[in-house]
Length: 255
Image 1 (cartoon, one colour):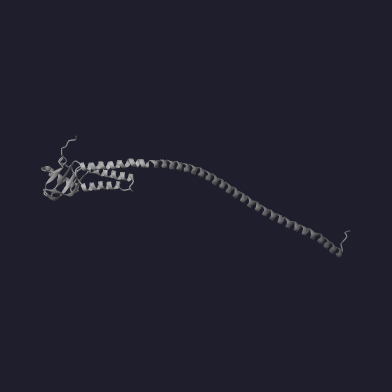
Image 2 (cartoon, rainbow, N blue to C red):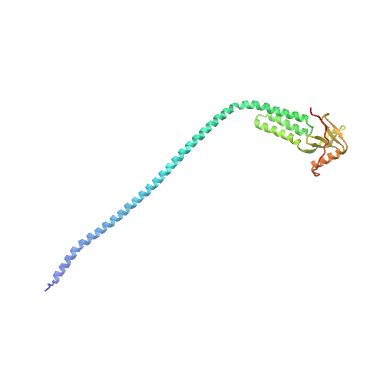
């Protein structure tokens, strides 16, 4: 037969079992808390490791950037050394050239003056057309050569412009009004220049004349050339269509 516990003994046994279970639960709870703390600590440590790794990566990237900048700076410095060397050589060359500027100027000025004198001689021997305009140009060249702040290069350019203007007279036709003396009376006539082939005029009274290079005088023109001169003047004034123009050419010989 099984022995039955009395009520008193049952209560005592339950109390004994409960007393033994309570320390075990506390130990389990403490173990769980400890585990959770360790897990959180491990997570914090891992986070710190991740941060340190990110910092290390940034530092490596920055270090490489600094190396690239250093290399670029070294390359730039070497390039600048070449530039400085080139500039020093250029300065040395310019300094050497400056020493010869006075000699070049001393040779250039007489040449320019000679060009002006040659142009004056050409104008004086040429047909006497637009004399005031041409003389003003020559006087301007004389003034330029006497002006201290005009460089030889600018003087040369102005002289060449004057030569070019004289060349254009020989390539074109032109007409203008000018007052001359005819029969002792001042008369305004229509001048006409056939390049440098002939210089003629048409007077208001219907007469015409040609400048004689040999005598330096005006000589009358008669016949069909008078009508040709009137036609040429109208063409130059854009009052008539362009056409073949006939000029009273003077015979001359070249010695």
